Length: 175
Image (cartoon, rainbow, N blue to C red; front, side):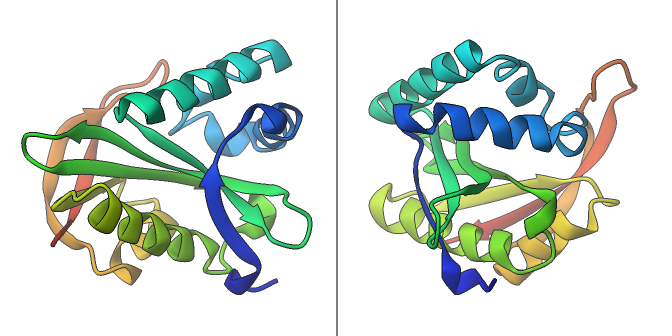
């Protein structure tokens, strides 16, 4: 599989079973950096509510959640989100996760490139951010592959469930 076999599009109600399965299959990968997404998809009913919420957020332009999909079978390979949008500063943060079987194939870098185009051209955002832990080398590589530039270390930026706060690295792209 190459990154050309993938595309991104918004989640929709018909994705509930598949998203629930994706979350279940990647529970171990998601529990550390995506505990909220994990808890919001613990059951199929919760996944349906999650998709409704994400659809409403897109309508309200508060968050934009997309599925990263395989063109061959429409399978969800990951999620990519524009969040923490500050319309007065024309700024947003990009977050992403990819299924274990798709890791290391350039698919996340491709998805970030696509969502960056959307954010800059369609939403007219001027600044995009990616926040990653320095040990999450895959995420750091995705940021660098998309010309995001390291800005600074954010002290105590993220607190994993039942753990001490972590310093995170801020990468930024300015249009």
